[in-house]
Image (tube, rainbow, N blue to C red; front, side, top):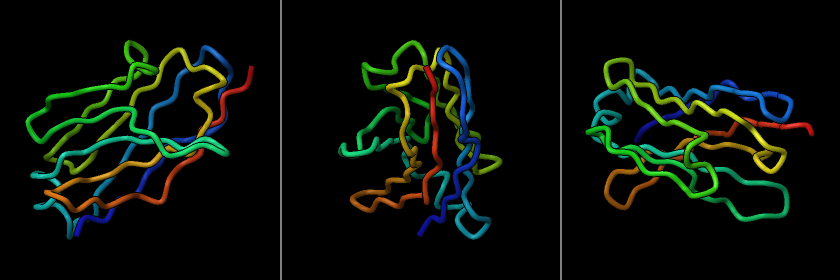
Length: 118
């Protein structure tokens, strides 16, 4: 099972940028390289939603709400995944989670808070 740790959240003004990172533990390295990775977020009172995904081969897809503003990437050699978030809006405020999917198994990180002030 992959163990994931997110970092990079914080408080930013509307229009600003943040970069989130997700690191897999050393013991998860071989698993990380075959997993499809993704970022999800959950705002207060709302369900968790998918926002960006990247396959082990680097193919990406995005939710319409972040397309053109967010960029997902991964470095299989370093067992890391990132989410570059630009032109942030107050409605992007949420806890952001990274996830690793292998088959039907999904592993979640603990989440990192992103707050965008208006």
